[in-house]
Length: 351
Image (tube, rainbow, N blue to C red; front, side):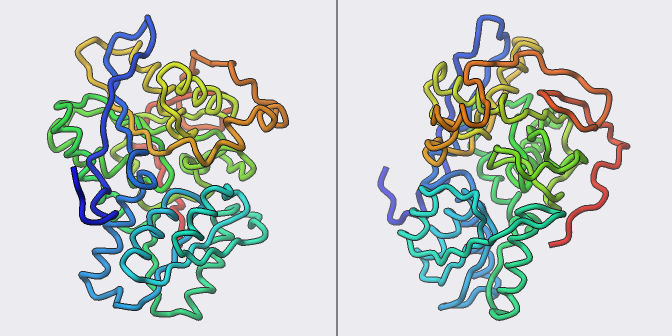
């Protein structure tokens, strides 16, 4: 297949049926969003930027600015610079050197904040910097990934991919960060199957589901120190939390057993999907969204010295998540079913 631009390579990523384990009953398909040019959020960048251009918000020769520590930064850089815009990325010291090198090579202006905020962690520090940037660049376009409705809308095409390639989906398993991929894909899939069950995968120490924020957690790409407006709690049936040890171990197992070299968001989704395949009947179809390649984690998840430094045991696989009766702070892989009357969406962050 020949495309006439890098932007047109975004989307139509492959899906693969996983090998799983002897106890698995239901099939699991991994949607390999990592096969976009730079990752899953290329879809969001493309949708948000083109919608802004069409609406006259983003004008020729304009400025684009976004807060990101990973894959959205790459998507915005790809699409924005390709179309000739001046792209500014606000990030923090957690950014890996490979992603930083890629952004600079593609032409982004990278701003790294120095210190996290006491409340809201690195996300709040980046957003505070971004607000100051907007004061001096009032006409800049900010995609606002956490609240822009074009974030979840960008994943309607992903849902259509699944319907074309797989057919009926009974369970959708996806990491939650900004809320876009999980909720956007789920809403579109529910049009075809209203009985779809939606499983959110989060990090221990993430504030999205009312846990106490632990801004020093090692996981990247999922979890949040704030509660994004694009997380639609009404569509989520259950949430799983994995700690750093579990997320990293399952990411390594994903590479070893399934031959998929990915980041910890994909590793956590794999763990939950694999466990779920042992809990449901054989007629159910499970899809996990795998958003990130492992390249940017070669100095962390895939580095034995890093694992030893942080006390991560690479082959310690927890296969028995604990069911909690409600949303609460947890330390190990735990899950709970969402009570539709539970007010998990209070104190939504203002950006």
